[in-house]
Length: 367
Image (cartoon, rainbow, N blue to C red):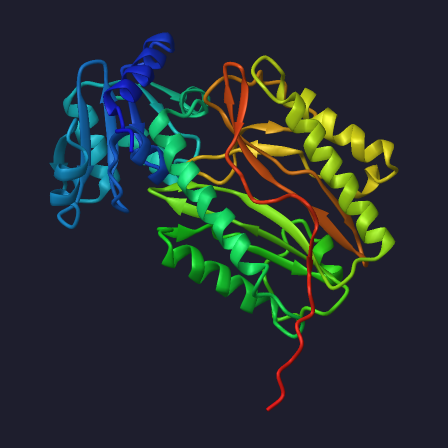
């Protein structure tokens, strides 16, 4: 697997600090700490200046921090993290800092009160501008995760039967992915059947799956902190004419979007490609979701394939393409692929079939 280049990531952040005329960045969120240092402990703060990098953490993680964050000077604090952070900033005479928008207001006030800081600026846009372009290490982690999703889908279509609950199906998928190498499973694991499949984010329930129903499965394996995202919808037994029709519309929307997605197109333009297929088929009122989104250390990252996001797509972005139709009281269909934008178009990381999978009703063996 390609190695992480932390120095390159830090260098890009330093360029942003220079552009914003800031002395340092303070990073508290888990995802950004991992991104800029590889430190995975639950408590810590990064300070990144023009010339120096510090990692503040407590005794529980000091040894771990030394091993993971090799480019950082590790400082073991004894008081609270925020108090120690303020003291260090004051001692270094840092008075113009960039912070994350997710910083708790109480932490912000404590820093403001206990240091000589005169200027604060929010770094979220600068950080996400760096993180939205994935390096080859990140892409390899995401690719490994989506490969596990492909494998899990191929397994589950031979497992599902009427009489099982959504939770049973979800647990089987989770067990399969973890057994085959997933570090974790994304928390919003969606298994929704029958009329519940109209819920875009319908998490697995105790509802029993019945013959003649759609089962929508939205899953994701996490590898080294990086998310993957995968959705397929299957039908139990022979589908109705309406089920086939709606599935085909969603399939066509996905394929049309994939034919157009690539560098130079905007997120909104690709959203309109998929949306127009659904609109022209007469199902626009049942398709309110955006067409897709980026992901990485978070399950949802910018850019988003939606009408008001005019971000140009660039090589290195990883984007989900997931059109859907959701009809309350009847059910819904979503099909999702995960692609990497490349110089000459895109690479589709998802290999599982998109054709409607009809789950046969297997005969019960009676003793």
